[in-house]
Image (tube, rainbow, N blue to C red):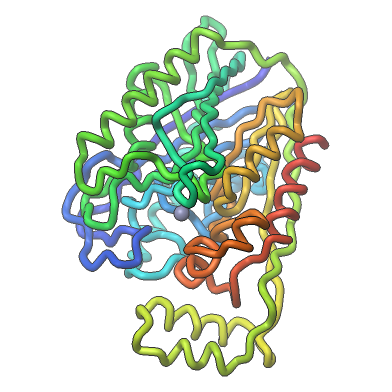
Length: 410
Ligand SMILES: [Zn+2]
């Protein structure tokens, strides 16, 4: 039998903290819409323990991930730091937390507290592990998201659900997997909020009286639709309707047979566009027409990479947790929906949950077609959310996708 424990903690920062996700935001938060949470889902098979920890945050970078893993593992016997998957829903109405994300000031005291609170929640979930059964369901939903680059382009409509039950059939906790940027609330919204994703997990946690977390799928080019700007009612209605779809899915729950638990990780090489001369970055760093965060990006690149032209590669972690025939796939940024679709198609017989912004916050993994077309995600976003010398290339996306498939197959 599986051993499963779940826990959920409020991580809402003090009002007045700066929010992250929109470069153009010019004032700090003024209140709270939906409190932000961290949710830990811990599963063991008697020999190994793995953690899926989801957070109502824009993204966490490697330094925060390593801190959380170390803090949690040192307090849990037999829990390997590398067996902890930490991911974020990517709400654009949460606090500025990622090391790499630019544009707004960060509250380092809050970030330190946050890492401790997330680790503590994992420890609490490990402490509550009990004999459990695991159940899954999936379906397709219309009217919740769209392809933001191309209305007629691919949009992921899959809604998936994983539920843990105790020996008496009571719900221990759950994980919902849907695909859409939590950007219904836009840069004009100054209330801290988990956006539709926060409403979704709040509703399900209340309805099932158990901790529920959300994995955001490959949502690089997918937005929740419509945009609400500052209209909280539209966001709440959207999250509630999506929660109702999950509750309907529960009529068709299938038990995940007992099996092995395995965690597989690969560090994938990240490569970028052609090397650029140092003089180009010096020019961008000094260009007063550019937003301040773009000047900062160019300065960081000059400090981080040596040589002229500026060249060098980086690494990103892909992680797969296999729970019997379930594969939780962690991608260290947001991939385009076609990437997620192709991963699922390559893994017949497996029940796949795609988790983006997992274990790092590296930006967009665009398809080769998207790279040929250009646009915000391909040509600009890396100057806002990384210190990379240029945008990651299409080869990187394909390497990430292949690592997901290889690791899931095992
Ligand atoms: Zn994004």
